[in-house]
Image (cartoon, rainbow over all chains, first blue to last red):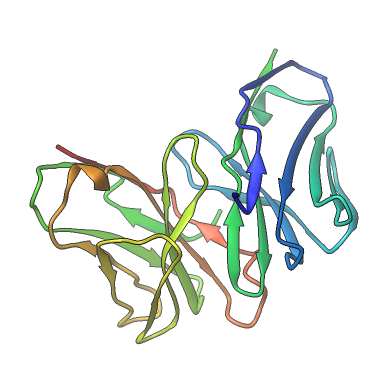
Length: 109
Length: 114
């Protein structure tokens, strides 16, 4: 069983839509939960991180962690064409990292 | 913009050749990492370093080697390239002492072995 499961998509939405991206995990030791955005031919860049359970908001982006369900989400409000990218979730326990496969998102103008 | 650089960005090379992928960062970070990324697959950690003269193998078995002689430089070497090494290689760095969620990634090297 993979440590982290993420639906690869692809996901295509119209501009202005609310996007929901999700990951599930199996290791209850994970404490830090991260979302990275990766544009084509670029390296991943950190969008947001959350420690333990709860929500975190940053502009149009909201990260949620539900440790009881081992489920994390990233919501993008008022999606823009510039949000078109691959979104990777990542989790860590200590210095070990585990990444999802990434979800490809296209926002259509 | 993260100050972490990788060269070359793209490389096509024949089987059996020795290659070195370069990674440099100007942020003074102690921790550095090499990941392998294939389409539709998660990032796999192949090597990491916590400082000069410190290197460890990651979860993914790899025929590559790394060195860390200077803080800013973390090259990855394949002694004899094979088609199975065809992949995207990502270098990353983070500060020592923090949880490494603050990883800064380079743009990647896309390697094709023919």
